[in-house]
Every structure is written in structure tokens, then in C-alpha cells.
Length: 285
Ligand code: PMP
Image (cartoon, rainbow, N blue to C red; front, side, top):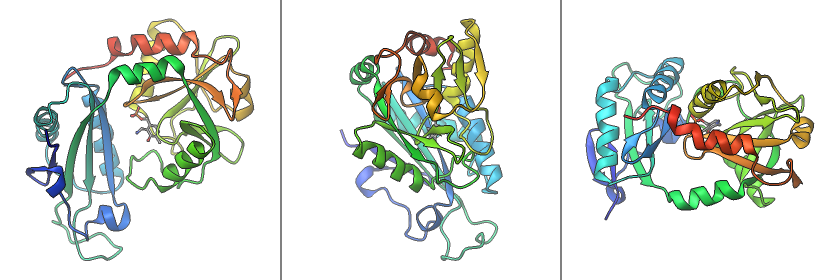
């Protein structure tokens, strides 16, 4: 079956789906995106993803392309047309197509909207989670507003590749003080030796992950000790457990950092429990 993409009002085969070469997403990375998990054909935490999208658009002064209810219909329809049971749906909104010029284009320029969806192999993903993943630390060289989910991801791309080149599956980005900000495409967590769950507080220096916010709720429901604060790479080396969170991986145990085993070198109990419990707390639509 050929994949179908939604582009500016039309559902098209991937091969013929396109935006113009002067789209500001292509020219300036002037756009934002969201990735929502799909489980059993339903969207996971759509409401929160749409709230974050609205915020990203507002921060960049990009007009909302359509009401949230219409966007929801498009996302569900894209999932349906691609017959996705388990996977992800990807949404991108750019400032639209206009003659290449740095200032914003004329008022009334229509934002571009694309939506794609793809299946993931849940069995394979569970196997990865059972094994856990190695991460590699990389300096965080991103701009100062990474709380906006913009498509300007070049530093993330370079970090992820640098990690891959060293045998890692994810990069942990490190600020000038030696503290972990987040993963290249995930939020970063540790569990200390005395069992406390730690993740960096929200600010302009990390993305407010939707999975992060749900995991905080899960941890509270489970009565786990939780602290929102920055942690250093050295603290992470000494941690009992580590994991990352994102819509596409949910809770993914980290088994080594820069080649040093975390805890006993296998997925930790807390990480695994949070992963198991996650979908009980998530919203389906
Ligand atoms: N941080 C970054 C830099 C990301 O790219 C992502 C995934 N898009 C996340 C965190 C996790 O966010 P979420 O849980 O909303 O997928």
C-alpha cells in the first residue's frame, strides 16, 4: 500500500506530495512540528500535543492554519488512510511560501500544513526497551529558545550522528556547566542511588516534552520521590538508573553513558515500571 500525506488541503501519495521550493520551512527552518504516538489506531495525548503546537505557533507569530478541531480531523484521517494501528503521526506547520526574504511575508500568506503517518514495529520497540540503549554526551550548541518545537534541528541532527558514530543510540546534550539539558530527540532522566527521580525543570533550555509531563504524573501516582532539577554528567555516571522519554519511545531505559554502565548495566526497575504504566495515564482520542 502506498503511503498518503496531507499537504495543504489535499491527501496525496508520498511520491507526489510536495511544498514549493520557497516554502519558509525549507528556506529558513521557519516552522514548527509535533509528533504524536498512535496506539491501536488512536492518537495518544493529542490534547497536550495540540496545546504545545498552539504555544509554538504563538511564540513564533505564525498564524494557526486551521481550528484545532479541523487539525484533529486531518491527523485522524491521515492515520486512517495509511491504515496505521501502531506508529506515529507527524505534523508540520510553516510560515508558508513566499519570495525568499528574511522578514515575515505579507499578512495573509497561508501557513503550510503537512501531515504524515507511519507504522512502527511494536515488538521490535519492546525488544529495544528490554535491552536498553547506550547514550553519548555531546555539547549542547543549540539556540536559546529550544522550548519552541521548531523544525530547526541541525544541532540535534549533528549530536545524534556524533552519538551514533560512537555506538550510542541517543545523544545527551550538555550545557556549559556540565549539566545535561536533554536528549537530541528526548528528555533525559536519572534515578539516584537513593531512589529519587530527577529531570531538568522546564525553561527555555529544554523542550517541554509531553511524555515527560505524563511520566511526572505516573511517578506521583506511584508515590516515587521526584525532584525537578538539573543534574550533571558526573551524577548521571553514578546514577542507579537513567532513561529518556519521547512520544515515539515512551520511556526508554539507558544502560550506558559514554561507555560507562549505568547501575548494573541493564534497564532499571523504576524505568521499566514507568514504561509499563505509561498508557494507563495517557489520553487516547
Ligand atoms: N526534547 C527534544 C529535543 C525532542 O525532539 C523531543 C521529541 N520530539 C523531546 C524532548 C520529547 O518530547 P515528547 O515527549 O513531546 O515527544
